[in-house]
Length: 244
Image 1: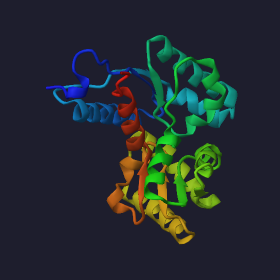
Image 2: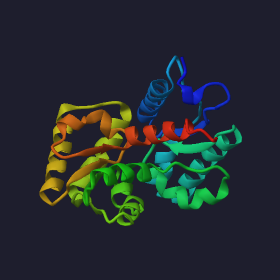
Image 3: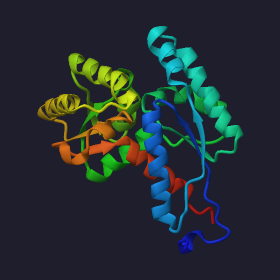
């Protein structure tokens, strides 16, 4: 049985999802979006998803090999426009670092984005934390979109030192993106988190959507924020909001 809130006449909104960056986290998004939808609506409900899966190799060649940010941004814009044309009501990108392109992309489409950093910042607010560590690929850790959003909420952001940033980034690209989750890497990530905690981090953002597949909250000594889980929960909440 469907919940009373979503009986006949209330349409679940279509989630436009940009995936492929990597396929590993995209599969986790698809699973959680459907699990959470079924949990919320009951019966055998499933999420309405329009998925555009980007070629990760093409993206990596633009961003890393050629260092061509404009080409990478164009690749994401085309994917976003495709899901908009297919009828998406709003858009999620299942990759943290790609959110750095949103200021250039948002004005070129007519449906809203659900920003992964905003969903994460909401969860940090609920715990009242004021200093947070951030893990992710180098462009996320060294960029400013998380820092800017958190700063507006009076939350300071700490990132690992240069050596640790390179280590975190390398392991994401060389292992996690390939669906490889090693005990040695898990121990290395935990050490980086411990270093952040010693510097004053009250919690840590798992700011790459593959990291929560490597580390569970129970393994981390300080509060952790799975951007995958928080983004999926926010997406299901938006998709099932009644317009009445």
